[in-house]
Image (cartoon, rainbow, N blue to C red; front, side, top):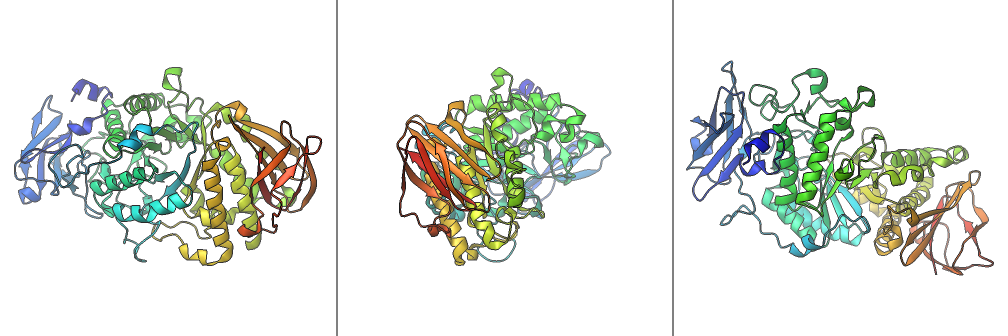
Length: 602
């Protein structure tokens, strides 16, 4: 390893030197702990007795070779502080860990090493060669919490393995029109309720669902079925548990030493991004998931907490953390040009998706939290008040081309008393479904890539709980089954028609046709591709809008692609005629309450 690069935050593969590395016989263990008085290796192969580790290089690194150690065995580092007290720690660079509440690291062999039964041989070369950043391609993401999509039983801690869930999930994604899956954090974490956002093992796939090799198999199966995999990554903070990174060598090695900036709003420890060793650690972790597990993208959580001190613009920009983001993204894109980097950022900080070479942060996509909040607020509002809120739905296009935005309806919107997406729709039970269908058609016609959290697609009415599987039995109710069928048709339509995605980030890919129907709550716009034009018309009022006329140029006929009010989806209208012939360049529509229609311009 380039030690100078490690100290200056330039390293992206520190995990190849640090951690536990099996050799032809035995295992070499290395850890970075400059503040430690002494360190002992303990594990199954030592009978949990202390074996001294020795200082190497400049004395800040510790090493031990254990001939008796083998892949699959547990180990810890017993780190003695300067006051002679000690704490048993898991390996910060460990490639596997025990299931909570146990805390030992487990020796694992990386996939690239030969002659082992613990690694996995990927078969996805074709996928890896053709994948892209999807800027001019469809990107329809299904966000997934691994332990609660489906469960083998009602027990909170009974889960399918990585490999088992692949066989359940992949056919579902293919049938229902999702071409990417985003996995909530899978690096090891002690608390189920943290959903993986407070980590203890940044290089360890959580043992809840099996081994790293099984996760590799999951990713490989997705790729063989033309489904990309995005992983949530947490570069902002880590769990406070004493056996992990917190006060690792008796000092604040990874975190800030001062409480006012060292503790996050979630009570976790904030990484100190000004330290080169911390930068190398996080960069190496991100690169590890992309390299060793063939992940196609990384969604970085809580980026606003890195841009601004404690996430508050009033406190000012954290320039060292911003510099770290730039350099990490630059390095990751150099190593993996075709991966996608997503920022979960709710601020108005400029140029988040601008290339680093042009002064930006270097992300490929930014979550459009403003679109999400404005749109959901609009649909919560009673129809009699929507004319006052009319331009909440037009505002997003005022700033849309400032960054490359993704439209998210994530897990954060269906927990902690916020209600599910279906519940957010105004009105009673029957009134919610036509609004939700129209809402989703607005989302999928709006420029920007798409993300939808599991359960949203069949109108879940219970807030998400990580201990329970989704309410699949709700599909026995016809209205939910019809909504599920509608979402399948909408997803597949999105994937099929380039006008919905080809020019997402080009100004000539979108045009308002009518955005000044405040009293009637009608909106109309067109989406463009090189060889296709699609018209989207929406009536978000609770009244039928008859004889609504639109001037449309360069076509004589409209062909219906999808109607949210169709009877097959639980709507009120049967579409016997699927074409509209224009007269004098004008189309006339009769729009049902809470409805949307897509037409292709012929």
